[in-house]
Length: 233
Image (cartoon, rainbow, N blue to C red; front, side, top):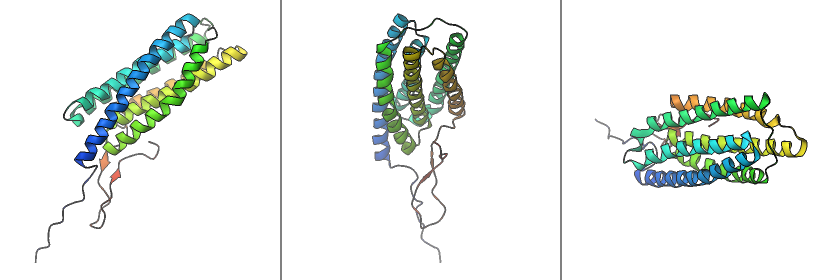
């Protein structure tokens, strides 16, 4: 006697839920682009006035993050975002590498005796605002990207999170320079950020940025969904 066929449990969110998540990612990416454009203009202008390589580098990081977010926006503007994901990941990876290269060069120049930056109240306020705003944007996009199974959305959220780290580095560096004249603090911390950027760039290039929907555990009684995510994602 033949047994009745049992449809396998669906993997990943439903089509309606995927549309909601894709729309959410597009809105978060648009917010990230808008904020970073303003951030770049303010940081580069303030950095030029104060002769601060840290502030100028922070502004250029915002430009790089715009390119990363724009890659995700381009991906989700198409009818089939999955078909564009690999190209978007490569753009994000190159953005990470460009950021790491710039931060490394400017930090090395600062450590070898670059021009000392003046106090910048605008820079301190900007760094504090970014430190407050960016973690929320990064978390929201990473959560939506993981549920949607979009590696590029998660990779771009890491780019936003890296901007949070840079905001903290900038705030500490500008603060120590203003209070104690410790001009070496910022470039040393920035070199650590550069190393993290290289690591994230390599993962994005290989497509390792979690997560993609995976099959649930074997067995007819389960209908849960798991994801191929590393614990530290």
